[in-house]
Amino acid sequence: MEKATFAGGCFWCVQAAFDKLPGVVSTTVGYTGGHTDHPTYEQVCSETTGHQESTEIIFDPSKITYQQLLDAFWHNIDPLNGAGQFCDIGDSYRSVIFYHNQEQKRLAAASKTKFEADPEFKNRVATEIERAGTFWPAEEYHQKYYKKNPIRYKFYRYNCGRDQRLRQVWGSEAGGGD
Image 1 (cartoon, helix red, strand yellow):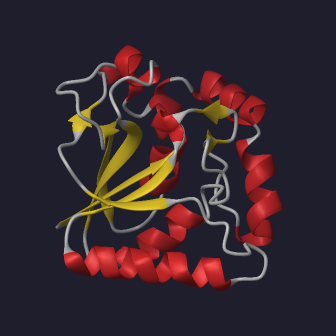
Image 2: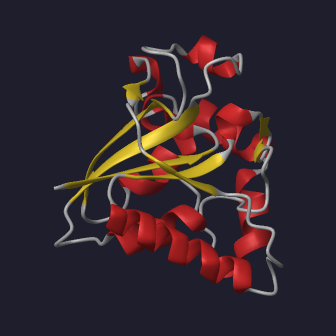
């Protein structure tokens, strides 16, 4: 098994996107990229910890590659927004690929370069690539929120404009839904 970690705005939505991929063994939402040990949701949302809402993914590389995970990540975020994602604004919601080894770093950089070269994106890709640090799991009520609270989750996702913006950016390749 291998590990991948992505921050793409609301971690409920990122978790929902990755949970449905064959070869993903497990996902955990939490916080990484900052300087506070054992942060709480309230601390992270206060923008004082340096952490991003993130999703840690354990995957079977014989069934899904890191490149396929990167492709899924890109199509579930707005890579042009450096201030957050969709209706969630702030450093804790910015999009980041957290790499766990040099191969992940190389693949992440190559995927970003590909999108930066696309005339649609005009070198405006704001997603960052950073070394993975300590991952702090979020509170239990955040884990699999989309399954525990499907109506509230869908209401949030729709009102945040996530799927609408994904379709604007990615067209028929947009991730999302669930």
